[in-house]
Length: 339
Image 1 (cartoon, rainbow, N blue to C red):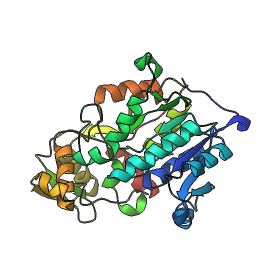
Image 2: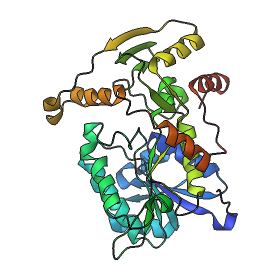
Image 3: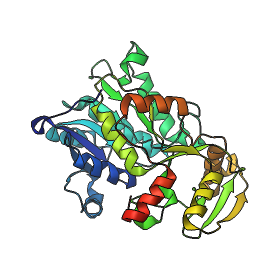
């Protein structure tokens, strides 16, 4: 399944809106003998990105805005990028507008034939409508990708988009469940803590459990996510599926608390938080209502990637990757001081 490239024909991968998970992608692509990487930034954020990527030799190019299609095409063609990956994290209409521009830039580029939009979350297959705030962002763009998919053997040919005047662009939506890094001290990971969203707070050694704590979740170390993406890029064209999933393990927050208590040899303070879904407050833009819908997604199991499909794709795309479990990551962090 994997194909190797000589130094002279390395593929170039463009990573746009390099955030937390984007840093791991840049590091792993930079470490690969098969790929070159270029980071794409807004002009206003270039200096911040240079600081963020100071530890990695990476070319940084900028556009005035991420909806500047001509500017994006110029970068893709100048670098001969074959893939565009987005790690942009917007939960409003800006997500659609920017990703629409990314898609059009890929279609107009002379070189770019693959696109990975920003998802990096849970089970899209079984919970496409959760959380509801994706209705303004991810869902409309997913529908656009599917509308433009050409006829053919959908299962065998993977996912691609085209219009009558554009070339085919292969794409996949990548899900990884929770990032395992949320369980770790913030200083050992590139991933920014999200204490209002993630139930376990290591800094106070406490937890606010939604539901019973026995609801199935999945989580993956951020660096393993990045390594999986690099492996996926080696898969031959036409083999990508509409959704691609990885997981370090499937577990529950109750079990994760037991692992943390055993590792740190102390008891965690655990409280249970009611799940409150208030659609009226959500429509009014209240943050608490946003979190309520995220809590709902968590309790019904939408944050756990589908096990059977994930394990099948592990064999198909990711045979050479050892996906670490929470206990493994805690031990590794203790040994090395970083993830």
